[in-house]
Length: 160
Image (cartoon, one colour):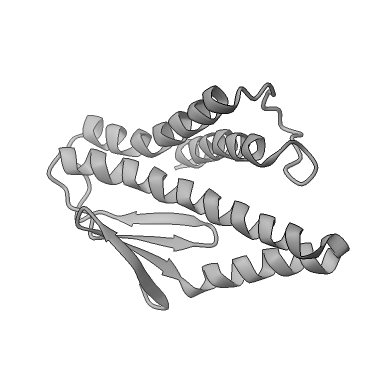
């Protein structure tokens, strides 16, 4: 993809980031800093976005590993401000294989959310009004974001 650069290669799949992602990080940091929250809030917000996108990379590798199980190579994953895109060589031949590849990404987010819940013993419930800016600590927000991400991916899949 034009305007993207290589971060690393893992198991034959190149992970790339689009330059607009860096604009997202700059925007998030500046919003926190300029709103009077200072440098610590700007750094925490930037770290949170970075960790969120690490979860997006893991989500995309869920698709990659499932596709490989059917002999489909995935040359690269590109991170954009709106999420990640794993580029498959081809689509699976059978609908059941396509389903497995499609749900493998969100299942990674289920595992991440469950791991955070188990390790940190977070006691909160997901609800549509959850405010990421005002609610909970870092790991609670990360857990809730992974749950929200599963929900949003499901909505996109239902619309297609």
